[in-house]
Length: 264
Image (cartoon, rainbow, N blue to C red; front, side, top):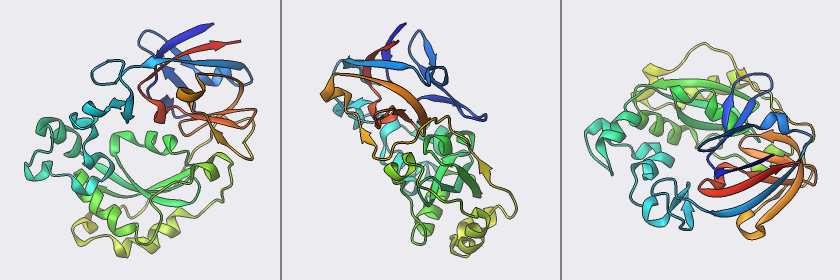
């Protein structure tokens, strides 16, 4: 069976294990059903997620011009502490920024390759943790806007990581951590303006990924360079497809690429 479409990050369903869906314009694939099967992938062209044109993708699924124009790629996306909608100040599109920034946000601890601190909209729990390949996570602060979440993350990342080691995560080279104990150690460092929003009592969320075999030495597939790839799918974790020959493919980092997928 053959599918073709522009890549966007896989949709997920929180179950045990996580269910993954690759969604195209007029079709979708339940990727869990492809575990153990041979998949061929071919790069077809680019398709910017904003303008739809066949122009080289720069970042986050957008061509260079769109990346610097669209509200969805503002600096506050990656750096929440730069959010200004709560002040009524526009970055690129104030109405969009109000919709996204002025809603409840969670500051959390997650363990994917190590314990890290992160920020997400409340509506994106537990999706954000799944996308990062975290096997356990815990909400520690719930604030009313993105700015407060951002300044809290900045304060806490002086004491805990804010990045995931993707190779370690994919190798499953991880240890279980007591995130409640981590929270108790960190809450003294929450900024004064966010202290009222500390979540005093909750429990870890545990996440089970559909992986038959973890790679010992994961090697990343550059489908734009290779143009074609064929391999047996043996796992899915975070936004990565894991193949038997230890090749891994990050779907999210290849957003905006049109691919043709054949399932043997």
